[in-house]
Each structure stands twice: as structure tokens, then as C-alpha cells.
Length: 604
Image (cartoon, rainbow, N blue to C red):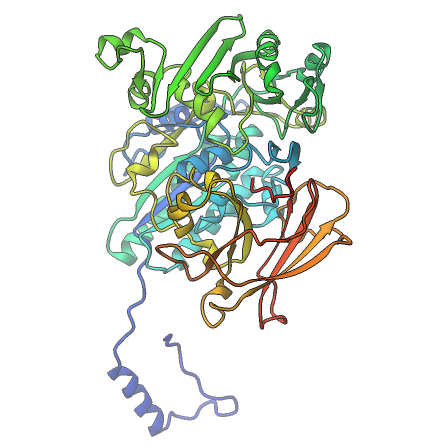
């Protein structure tokens, strides 16, 4: 109940309230006053692309000159905060895979939103500005407007100011009663790429948070707990030379293609300006291709999965020097022998040491957690890992010719993605408890698995194909599907449907599905507004028996692949679903998918 000011009706201005109004007011006073939910106890702020060294220098106080030659002394986050620590990113050190790792979500299809799908044997391109990944949808606050996201690449300072003000406004009006409020600030990464004064922006953020803390203290009678995380660093290398990887591959006898149909075909997904490269190739060519690419100008570190050894990985540097990584998944341990670990008694007789021992030994190394991050980069951080990953020297970048030329029209600040510390060291900062050096895969365990994230499936509608193998890679189960996925048959595909419409009167209603074939292959799409032309194939079916799990969700169902779909291999389809009896209501899902060579829908 919300009580507001009482005014006289139009035409009765100036009349005194009657006796009946006095009775109503007295009655309201006798009623119990509703207890409104308090503001969240903790603000967990995820800011994109802020490096450990930048935040450390800002806490200590730093004097520097900006691009116009003006000298500044800045200091921030030194009052009311504990000393900042490192949070070491994934490899590649890019946002989507890093934030997914931080939150323990199911790995994404690719390292970036242009990726290679092994099941489809094709490169897939998705708009990186107008789409949102799982980690973004879980935020209590994020900048949703595609237009404003685009402005971040043009006017990063103004967009950042708007983003922070909008965050504070939304935090103060959100009274869900939850302990944690999750917010994602993306424009800081745009600012880094475009040479904006990142220290000035961080000082502005600090001032705004101080204002919020003071207001929170006065309103709630307690201190607001603030935890700030960043996903990776930035090399601040400025303009760099473009690696001529396409011409190098061509001169070496390979073809850059969208799919691998021949031993000499190579898929080279490229998006933006990066300090790393992913290569997808025929397994028989990995050894030769890795040796060739290690000698390419601009290569710092190259890694590859040995095709005939599942848990053995090749590492090379630009000088042609080689090493091997042996991974024992049963013990989560890595080789080869390291003298320092041996002296500490942390190395087994077989030359292996645990992942935590390697972390402690290499936190401040030029290549922090290199063994673990290389192995995970080739096995776990994406559903479609690359055959070869290349970390570039910071004087070089990987980009399309057009994007690189466009970057020369602005003052380019630097990038990220490589495995070295400049690219990899994000940060973790707290106002309520000391932090420690950690990694993206470990940080959630320090904060109760980041409980209370937004359950967007309870508020939005959608559907996707899943399988047990992919779902089992979810590090932090947050739904019955995540928890029970290991009981599903590993070689089958299932339809996952979610919608608020499934909770309530329509909870037992069957789902009516319409399938249409899209006649001509186009790139995979995620946007709900996409409307490709329908095909000649059309089929209707009814889903009536969702799978049963030990625990259930009122807004989510999982169905087995219906028999007799009549799908054909290598085709693209659009699937639409509505609840039976609600044909006039909006669709609860609509998405496109492709089939593999067996005519089975491709999950990832």
C-alpha cells in the first residue's frame, strides 16, 4: 500500500474535509504501517577493462600528464577501501569469457560473438552491440540500450557519466530486499580503447560512490558494502602494427575460410582489435601450422592442443623454443617440473603440482597462471575451443583491415586479450573486507557463489537447445536444469523453455510449437527482432510432458527432442512456441537453429 497526499476533487477547491474523511484518516492510522524492503546490503560493481596497475596507482596517488600535456595528481579509492588485489583473467583475456568464468555460468559458444561452431562446421557472426550474453542478463543493472552502447565507442566520457548516474538512480529505487545488487559498467573498456583519461573517470566514479555511501548511511543507518571487480587489464600500448596473419597463412599454403572442408582450410574468427588470435584447423595440420605460426612477426606465445594426446598441450614462443604442458584432470594438477615448487615440497614425484600451487607461484609473473589458463583456454572457457591460440607482442594487434584503418581516425589507447600480465590482470577491491589475489575461476568461491543474481528467465521468455555435456560445464548451478543435467543422456538434445507465462494459470498447459525451415542459410541471429523469411517446410507439434527433476522451477521446462520432426541435415529452422489456449497471447519463444549432419538440432 502506498499513501500519498490527499487533495480535494476538482471543483471543490477550498472546501474543508468532511467528517467522513477524518474517519478514514483515523482508520488508516489504526492500520499497521507496511514495512518497505530496505536497499540491498551490498553493491557488487563489475567494471569492464580496469587493470590492477591503474587502480593500484590511483590508490597510492599518481602524478601524470594527460594527452594534452596537462599535469594532474589524482588519488581515489584510498578512503574506506582495502588495498586492491589482482584478479587474473582467462586466456584469451576478453570480457565475455572472463565474466562468464567469474559468475560460473555455462561456457559461451565462442571466445567472442564471432566464433567457429564445430558442430555446424561454420563461422557464426552475432552482433556484439545489440545482443546480451548470460552474464549481462543476470545483472540487476546494465546499460540495455543498443544506441547508448554504440555511443560508448564514440563519446566514452559522456556515456560513462550517464551510465554511472543511471546506476545510482536505479540502485536507490530498487527495493527488492535482496542482499546483493549486481551492476555492470561497460563504458570503461571503450574509454580504455579510445585513450580517454581512465584515471579521471575512476576518480569521478569514486566521487559518485562516496555520495551514494553517504546517502545510504543516512537512509539505512549502516554502511553500504561495495565490491568492485574487473575482468581483465589493458596493455596501454597505443597504436600498434596489424599482424598480417591472413597473408602469412596464404603464403604458407592455407586458405582462410568459413568452414573446414579440406586439410588446408583455416577458420580465423575476428572481431574488433585484439592482442590475440584464434585458429581453427584440421587436427592433422596442427603441428605444422603451429611451427609456422610461431615464426610469424608479432607472435609472443603460441599454444596448441596436441591432437593425439587429450591432456597434452604444446607451447612455443617467437624464438621457436618449445615446452609441453601435461594436465591431470583427476587431480587438477599441471606439469612440467618447476624448481621453485620442488623446493617448497609442492611438486609431486611425477612432476605435477596443483592448480593452486601454480597460482601462488606465478601470480606476479609476466605470464600469470599461464599453465592453467592455457589448458582452460583450449578446453573449458568456450564450447568451441580453438586448435591454436596466439598471444601477441603488445606492439601488434589482430584486426580486419577496415577496423584497423578506422582505429587510425581516433587516438587508439590499447587493447587486451593476450596472456601477459598487462592484458590479464584485472582487479578486485572491497570496502568491507580485505581481498586477496585470485583468478576469474576462483573469485565466486570467496563471495558465496555470488548469490541472488537476477533470475531473468522468471521475467523474460525464451528457449534454447541444450545437452548434458554442455550444461555440466556450468560451474555454479543456479537452476534445476544446472543441478540435474548430469542425469540427462549425454548424447541427446533437449529443448529448454522459460517464461513467466509458465508460472500460474498456464503452468500445466501444453506448448504449441511451429517449425519453419529457412530456405537459405544466413548467419545465426540472437536478436528477438530478427525476422528471416519463412521456408516451404512447416510443421506443428504439441509438447505435453516436460522432464521431471528432483526440484522444479515454476517458470522453466525441459522437453525431450520430439520424435518424427522431419528435420533435414544442415538446414536452418525457426521455432515458435505458444501456450495452448492462449493463441491470442504473445509468443513465449522464437529462435533459429541449425541441424547437424544427423539432422539433430545443434545446441552450441
